[in-house]
Image (cartoon, rainbow, N blue to C red; front, top):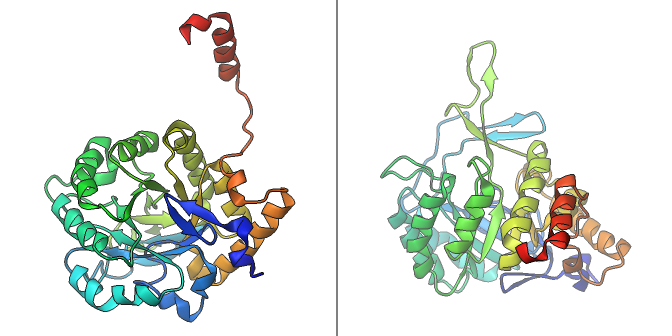
Length: 332
């Protein structure tokens, strides 16, 4: 049996069955299926479309993507064909795509998000919609995903507009508390969470004394952020997602199957890959094969048995709380 369809790898993302937990992240593989020219999409769990805005966007001027130590910098600026062209030219290809297709939504106003999400929800080709909330609101200049209040306001309008598709919220690591953001997303009706988007970063050309990226700052992704992303997934899983029954897509620096396995042990149900595709577009298949061997080595029948099963050390604070609960049960 093909390792990509082995039953030990089958998983379920908020009611959507996936043949395995490996997902191609938004912005890394084209609008829908373009990467299928070099990568067999039938062997993956899902693919996320490029983030689509209401109107076409040319994006930022070059340079807008560069290599960086242990990763890469990008400030693409959400370059895309816009909603109407996407619905007309790209989305129909999803019908023939041999894996689950998740639509990615971006916008500069709540009205933008609502209109795009509604259009995506109307298509049976998109069983799930991922909200990229790392966008500035033109009304106040604030990033939707930087603040729980702004995120709740966004979801209060988007959630009622999405009645068929599952709603995934992709959270930014740049907020003061990703746990509070995750709680706001769950309270707002998110069916799943994606953790994490890129870190805001700056690279400077020491000879010209100017930023290496034309936009100035950029998003940093790749292996350099992986341990931080794993910690954030674990924090959100333990504090919010596990009790709420909301699955997590772990995203950030996955290059090897061991990286994906870390996310799963930390609490993720599925794992996204983005920067890795710029290194070698066939790396996701290697990750799938490695995960299948790992599940067998762990003597598990299904990969779901390993979700959230990291064995963290018991801290002194935990011991004190347990002791207090035993000595004063009326306080618990």
